[in-house]
Image (cartoon, rainbow, N blue to C red; front, side):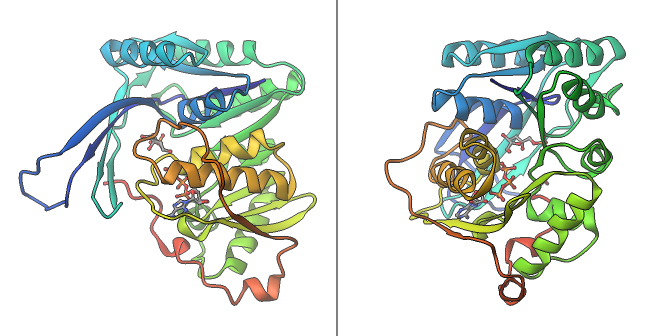
Length: 323
Ligand SMILES: Nc1ncnc2c1ncn2[C@@H]1O[C@H](COP(=O)(O)OP(=O)(O)OP(=O)(O)O)[C@@H](O)[C@H]1O
Ligand SMILES: O=P(O)(O)OC[C@@]1(O)O[C@H](CO)[C@@H](O)[C@@H]1O
């Protein structure tokens, strides 16, 4: 069983436009809303691939009701923890050339009782050998230790923990030894304070995260693919993608596929990359399953000297593309 948690879920509103023109009135030719937040996206992808999953999220206000109704319609099992404030809405402006501008709201603030129920409800779902997957930003309020409490609680239940977050929540959770972390290039650069110009730099940064406590590091590098560093070795992989439509949620699909593929070694990386390739070829975040054939190339036991010669274009980006 896989239990995902989104402490700060969102209703993702995607608007498809021709071109973004700053300061202009732009008319979208298609728009829609989807239940989202990274943990919700991971759960939707796993459910679409018939993997046993439950997603735990706070739900407040009209948007909270809408998100849970949409999850019910999709048949995705969820636990909604009632909160007083309204769940956020995040906007993605998708241009015809697949450039995405994303505006993420801060989201609601949780009080002590709400944060405590979120932790309790999530931990009630996990048993020995399960995965607890902690995803996204933390909301405001009494949640500073939320991921730390969840990692410690999961340990007490002999469950494994994956974390996909950024900044302080990622830095502070590492000493509690999560089994898996999935930083993107910007998050790796921010955490290590280094510019990542080559794949070798990414490997060095991933090693630094392992030294700080992560057991396995799955570093996603946008169009450059992904690097996996775990007890069995270091692997680099890339999937063949014919046409990128939108990369929003691709990291969540990568993580979901990696978990579904056994969360270990090149085979899991291959599965994750195939799911991510499917995600970038569709609009929005609502993962609809992988395509029939995706070519994925994996370099087993990545050679460090060669990696230092390979440029990493994604790693030069700032941490995220949030406006
Ligand atoms: N432009 C692209 N072309 C091909 N593959 C891509 C592209 N962008 C992303 N991918 C695939 O998706 C994976 C995850 O992408 P990325 O590193 O952008 O994740 P992320 O920043 O965590 O995304 P998100 O937070 O939106 O889920 C990459 O490792 C890669 O396999
Ligand atoms: O603001 P956070 O919690 O970092 O990320 C939230 C979010 O950007 O992540 C998903 C893509 O991974 C989107 O569906 C969602 O809007």
